[in-house]
Length: 327
Image (cartoon, rainbow, N blue to C red; front, top):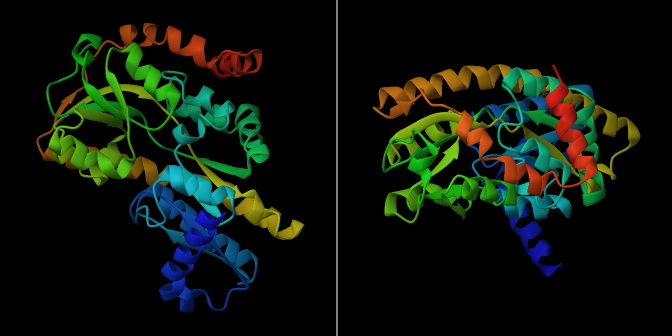
């Protein structure tokens, strides 16, 4: 536990400068996000904080730490579990090795499009997966849009599976993502998000995969000038709360937190749609070669062993079938 005491001390030091702004609050809850200020997920959590402050008559405030100020996602997940961080907006991938239900929505091509993903995650399947976080020390609160993820690299246009063979591609620290790349013939390289730019620049990796806003806001388009719209993943991002922090709240305040989180979802979706357009325009204007004409069928067919390996229990297979059956 000494590690977490050290993290807690560092967090207190980091927040000292902002203390005055939250001095009037009885409870100040700290939230982490790896993305920069202004990013749709960051702004959605800020909106949640505004709602909480208003609905609690100023008692509860949320202080949002963006730009990985509190660490990369793998580290902040640990801090959140132990209550050092109260809220955490995290990609689903890093949870895949912790909560098996999250693997299903991380499977390549599981969703037919963004609207299909919304219908699934807003319904019983989404609720079931959120509930699966609690035994692991987290309270699942809401899903945010994370866009469709596609491949980008600095070497050549990717127009087929053959083009990926032997390429060193960064993935999140998730067995699903590693196996996806392996099935496509690439060399998967798990790596923290914050290290990707320099790794591409120095040739440690050839490329990575992500959505338009992340590709743009991270500056990865500056060092990886080929972007292929294969859209292999449409993975919702998740907002969780530390169960240790949640359990300290009254039942009334817990209800306020849950409702404010749900009410932040439309804000995220609206901001995300607008941000995607802006990011795509900026990337295209920079001269990135965007490959949009691609046959996805061979990519989808290559995912059969990934599904067999990771949807390998009746419970997970049932989730896959229910997602695919959702109109």
